[in-house]
Amino acid sequence: MTTLPDKTSEMEQAVAEIRDGATVMLGGFGVPGTPFALIRELVRQGKRDLTVIKNDANEQGLGVDHLLAAGLLRKLITTHIGLNPRAVAMLNAGEIEVEFCAQGILAERIRASGAGLSGILTDIGAETELAAGKQIVSVDGRPVLLERALRADVALIHADKADRFGNLAYAATARNFNPMMAMAADLVIVEAEHVLPLGGLAPDQIHTPGPFVDRVVHLQSISEEYGVVQR
Image 1 (cartoon, rainbow, N blue to C red):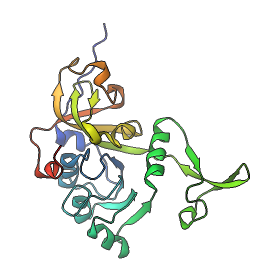
Image 2: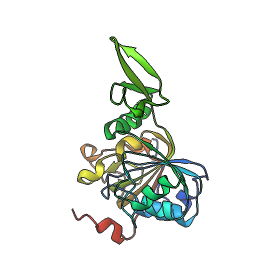
Image 3: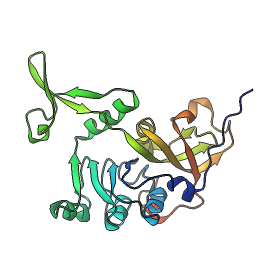
């Protein structure tokens, strides 16, 4: 009988596997589902020259903003940064590069990577400045863009519950980008509010199966950042 591995890890050890210059996906939509504790450890360890893929830049004083304040980001691939004045100022000053995607396109580019696709075809933005530098092909006589799949070296995600093998369950809208990011990175590190023994999650409770997860970190406490939105 095969024994499934125990993937639990201390946070410091898990984040230490991330190299400078890595491309890192961060789950979350605003506050829900954002791995705040893992982000803080990333800052504490001073991982530099990072490319971050996230739906947004969080607000000032939260999440991604800690990476910006520490000067650890080289590039941000996102849908908007308007809620974070530091991100806007750094973009305008040329201190970071920002690649903007429509939200649905960002989600599909990540999903495509997890599905083993090279990219997607879409007419969204085909005749706008968002098409600059992208390959345009003709489908049924109309121009469409090739949007390349997004893959990362690492995905940092937040789950409500995990078992020791890495099966995950998310709470409500904290599910958002986390499941697809767990399928689109070479190393997947999850912070979980509750870590259960194998079998602690019923099969129909599992949103992300354990084979997609490499490290499980148990959150011993929840910081104020997680309380910005009460559920």
